[in-house]
Image (cartoon, rainbow, N blue to C red; front, side):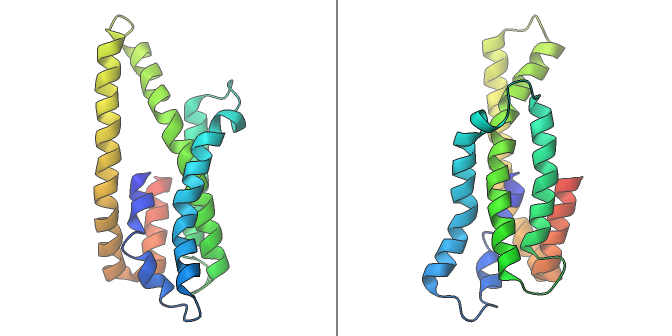
Length: 168
């Protein structure tokens, strides 16, 4: 998740330079779309997803939608389309909350199922460490991955590769 979120940090500004008529305010607004909607979705997920829906169903559905959103950011169908990029950023930002929030409860449920007699406080501490380590790994690998792919294949293909990684 964070790989997708952070891969745009070093390359989105380079891509937005291709659009000559963008003001600094509009550029800043475009940068705020993804994190802003990420924040909103983390608060809305308990009200949107019914309690009877399994956490992993929410996560798998969100990954599929995130894959499509990553393709729209490129966009995959033409060289430049600012509307598609903004739409893709909005959808991907909103879907991030649907990936982040159910992950920890899913990990706890899986641990309880696999190890019913384990000390739950200790197990939750370990799971929290694993979750935060993976979160941090994505935060650090995302910009490096995005910048490297951008240098090798350009913005559109970078987003197509990222979408492929999400799909896998």
